[in-house]
Image (cartoon, rainbow, N blue to C red; front, side):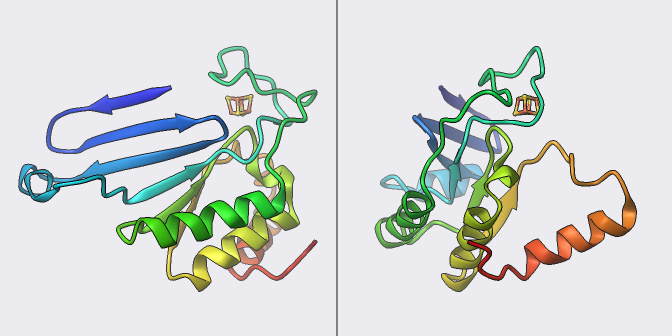
Amino acid sequence: MTRISNGENASAVFDLGLMQIQISANTAAERNMQTGVQPTSLTILPTYKCNASCRDCCFQSNPRLSTRLSGKAILDRINEAKAKFPSIRQIIFSGGEALLLKGDLHDAVRLASELGLGTRLVSNGFWGKRQQTSEAFARDLRTPASKS
Ligand code: SF4
């Protein structure tokens, strides 16, 4: 999948299997200054497995799928992106349901933070049914410890 949109918030997403690179420029001036590829976001789809199976899912994710990146591959891609693209500002984790990776996701969030990168998580929110447990869950993810 490659998505490119024009206008004031141009962005392009290049799908490389289980990894996407998103290139975005917020203004026309910013776009004009760009002479090469300067991605600001790396989107990683660490797994196609999901605990839901929505009829219209663009990846046809479901609980039966097992395709995923290893924890090491995720960490390697983050390190690689940071080294090759100094313009990278944030890592986005999507899927599938990335939270099914548990410790591997925590390790990836921790590495991104250590590298000074922001993180974003796209989740179906299965963990947010009760306020108390969802707050604890979010707190846990904000200060990730190794859970492998
Ligand atoms: S929750 Fe999202 S990833 Fe999971 S099956 Fe539904 S649309 Fe797909």
